[in-house]
Length: 332
Image (cartoon, rainbow, N blue to C red; front, top):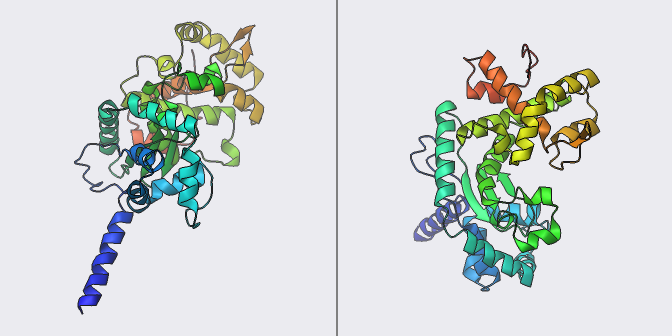
């Protein structure tokens, strides 16, 4: 009998450990977001050769570890017998060790991020009672994915947000990529990525045009800009420079009329869609380079107009809606 009870207790403990990266008390959400410092466990396991840190990564944060190994680093399967050794060997590179140290130094205090996420998620929870609040953690992805999303799990890579002037970035990234690698991009990147995962783009034949894509992305970014109380300027929310903001305000009517006349809005051509939604500012209009993600900015403008025309539409209804073709009198 004692043996059976012992086995049951051990099973409960093991099960609890495997649930550590699941959010507790989600229904009431009576606690503030606290960022799990998974990145520190990574550093201890790699730089300090800590077996206990590695064990904690596997037992307490199994989902985050699986995402890191299988989806971010893609170095194998978590079930492989030598995967722990390969993981530690991967991060033992001197450049990565320095990157991890710099990231730790840059992000000693997570309070501003925690506060921003707490306010945003509480607002979403009020708007959408069934909205799932994720466990949030920080990691070092070795300059791979900036944000990862799992089942009720949201992770961001602090090594991707050390500032656009960080020396290592200049070796691996273009200038248009580096401009998005500042600490102030963590909140919007986390929130947009999480909403994208909860409200994925409907890959239906009748909803694959440029208009559908920019409205989908625009509504997500519009909601996030409101959550972060940055509704004064959608251009600044997208990280535009002063020159790019001026360009948008000066040319939006001309650009919109040109898009309509060229038939781009109802095009399903992947190259046309990419030209309006890619972060590389390579598209040229009337001899001038167009700001990156111009389609997303237009989508945010259209979403704002749509919400003005539908004042009773809730955030939940907006996020769930896929057909915006009843938008009326589009004039910039």
